[in-house]
Image 1: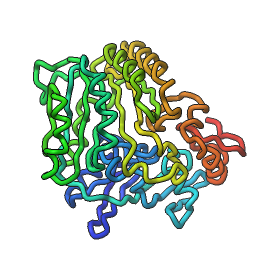
Image 2 (image 1 turned 120 degrees about the horizontal axis):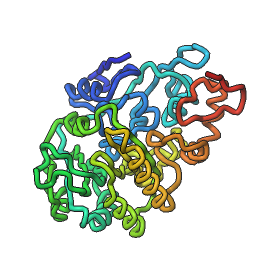
Image 3 (image 1 turned 135 degrees about the horizontal axis):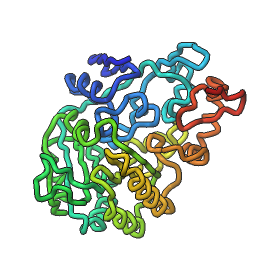
Image 4 (image 1 turned 60 degrees about the horizontal axis):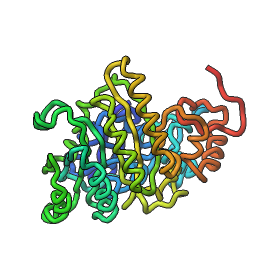
Length: 372
């Protein structure tokens, strides 16, 4: 079920449930439009959207769910329904962050936004400067215009273009930028970034889909992954010191840590407006152990768990649902906070036997769960 249809007169986009974001970007870019999504174009539209949707456009246009107008769904009892603000509004509320707990979404209707050529790319600094850069970053991003966003990362520089050979395989810290505002203001806006004297300034003019697909080759299907995540309200000095200590121990070239800003337009909705409840968080933190070889599974898992355990005391609790592993029901409830009870009510109404349970599960309070 793959397909994208853009209605340029209304700026809306109908997306089939099996599509990936690269297909959406390809279709919308022809009209100078984009739908807020993630950072990798091979990501599925369905999974990212139902979990909330954080990415390059979150500060400018909000989460992916903030641009969602309607969904068509097949429910557990076989009914086919449309959910939007007028039809099945309880279900529409729940699918905006509640994951795949309530049915199979066969199509999404999004409101797209004006995005065409952007200024984007990475700036890199030596790991020895990481504490300084993180302290600067935590102050800079919340005060920057909403037209600018940048996620922070620890990484190992891939041994490939466009990275210069002298940086290959070095452990570094980075901010990956996306600026969608007036090009005439870009010089002044990026002046504080360049005043930090990055070892690599990769910011350049590019089509938005080029930024969206920049990391596709680095993370092809089939890699070994282990994730841990948290929401963060404050990035204090002690937390920064712990981050940097684990950055020095990055176990593989693909392993990383990202901090995604949650502010600007993403803060305009209240915690109860959608199932995604952490509207007051400042960042979504994700620690990711990754490697092609199963032999590295132990190394990447141990590093990720130890890193998360060291930083969790500084978190807001809960985590972006798309970054959760199988971590138990307590973590699911912490992720939805006060919205969890309402999600259970919707689950009871639409899936009382918990047919849709291979997910971060919202358990119904009634009925007998179906067995395999």
